[in-house]
Length: 433
Ligand code: C5P
Image (tube, rainbow, N blue to C red):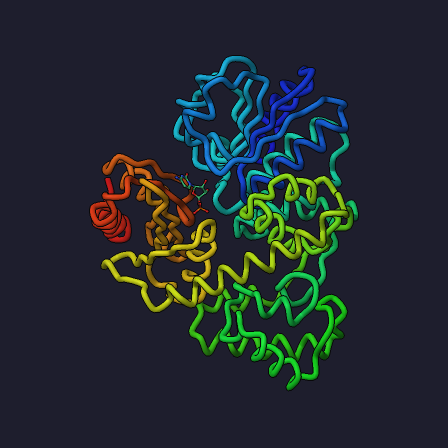
């Protein structure tokens, strides 16, 4: 199947290579920005000038006036009606489930060739497949893996293929260890949401724990004994909190050391790119992916600030989560963190039902919805629930089966919750037609 993806990737590369300039439009999260970074690096190496825009969403206003050649990264597959309005050459590189299969533009999407884009390859892996036809770009595999981690994908299917090839060529090295990122251990624990612990957001408690364990310094410098002691305590904490076993399993495991990127831990690169993007510092986030060392310190600071914001909002809303029957929902008042809140709640606070986090922004309510793999295996499809639920109240939504989002009119909240709860009830009971 990867061969079939490769064929479409080759046509996308052919389209790009014939251009004298290209507009790149990419999504504002880690997977989107790493995908944009891969395509921009590949274009730069081909001597093709490019202009990049990093956006949180595509809509009619943005599309109006756009002219090809354009390449969309990590967006577009769910909006064929918008993309087909654009004159000139267009290429969509995305991993969201396509809502149209027969398009006039070049559409590189794993779902179209039988690969599950929600779990097995992200937009950055798909962009990497295109970049591999634009020249010798194997060193960009690190960004492909960082993007996949950003979308909480595992190294299975096509991700595994990319990873294994990258290891063989010395682009990535696997190190076993604690998967909490890179840098000062006390800062990492204080601002950690994965794992989200009773010491997250509590510098004093972190200090007491580390003093008890006699551990300090950078996580990458910890010796085997220190790592073992720290890991045991963290795993115990996560277990005591009642998180599912896959959470404890993912805490210690393979870390991906990126030998060509300016931030070497793949998970950490993904985290700081995401935080910079969410803070609106999209140029800085992209610069990281283009290997600009000068922005690392600022990106690290943005990451700490972002995590602190997520943790303090999480502590506030944790007590106010409502149960609608088949789903839970909570209201946030902090912009740009609802996705992170949903991801942390579903992993560490209440994993048994899908969670929707809502925020009112002007006349609209934005929603981030998150599920678990187990719920998806039982029939949950949040993408369908968000799209159909939003459409019924005059909004729009979409995404993946496990992580999705929507925007609805401000007065439609209770109706929307009721509709989505009903859709998800049918999905989980296997009653959907
Ligand atoms: O914003 P959030 O991280 O919750 O988005 C989760 C997924 O849902 C993303 O893949 C995003 O592209 C998609 N989404 C969507 N339509 C929306 C909001 C989010 O398709 N209105």
